[in-house]
Image (cartoon, rainbow, N blue to C red):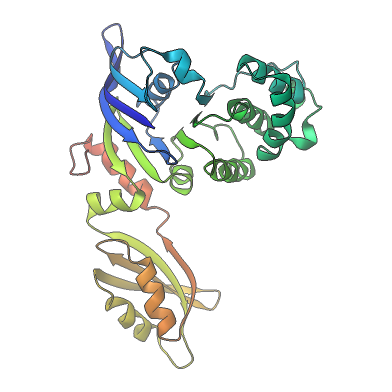
Length: 319
C-alpha cells in the first residue's frame, strides 16, 4: 500500500524528517509513536499529500505521490490534528459537503451518509450544529469526513488528543472497527492507545525511525525478554508454587515471580524470550487450572519507548 524511500523534509536548513524508508502492507494498522517534535505529523502530512517532501519517493498503491498527488488524494482519508470543521454547519450538511468535495454524486452521498453516521456513532446528532457539539463528537465528525469517500488509506493524526478517558475508549473502539475496511496510519504520543490499536509501531525520534515492529518485537529486541501477567485460580489442593513450577517448564520462560491475590486468583509475572501466552494458557488449562487473566505487562511499551528515546536509536532495535 505505502512505500517510502529515503523521504526527508527540511524547512530551510532545519531537518524535520528523515531520511526514512519503510513499507506498509494493505490492511495493516500502523502507529507512529514519538514525542512532540519527533516528525510524526510531518510524515503523515507527506503521506496525505498535504506536504511535499524535500527528497525521496512515496508510492501509494502503484501511484507516485510526488508526481501524481491528486490521484493519491482520491484514495486517502485524512484527519489532521485540528479537524477541518465548519462549525456553523449541521453534521449531515457537512458530511454531504465533504462528499461533494470528493466528487461523489448526490446518489452516492445519500447512500453513504447513513453508513458513515453509524460507523462514527453520530446518528443521534446528525441534525445538530457542529459548533454545539462536544470535543469528542467533533473528533467523530472529523473522522466521518475522512471516511466519507471510502478511502483505501485512512490517516489519523493524534485522534485522541484532548479527549477524556471515556471518549478515548470510544475512539479506540471506532478505530478498531475501521481497520476492517481501511489501511490505517495513526499517530500518537499516548503509548497505551498505540499498543491497543495498532498491529505495528514505527517509533520516531528527531526525525528518524528508531525502531519498527509489534510491541512484542520491540520488547524482544530491546530487552531480550517479554513480560506476561497471568492470573490463575489453581485447582483444588494445588499451591501457588506448584502452578509456578508448571509455568517455569514452558520453553523460553526464564523467570516466574508470584505476586498477590486478585479476586481469588494468584497473579504471576512471567519473563520469557518471546511470545508464550498461548503455551502458558495451554499448560495451565491442561493441568486443570483456571486462567482468569493473560496479558502483556501494560508498562512494557512505556519502558521500551523511554529506552529508545533515551538511547537516541543507537540500540539494537534500530531498523
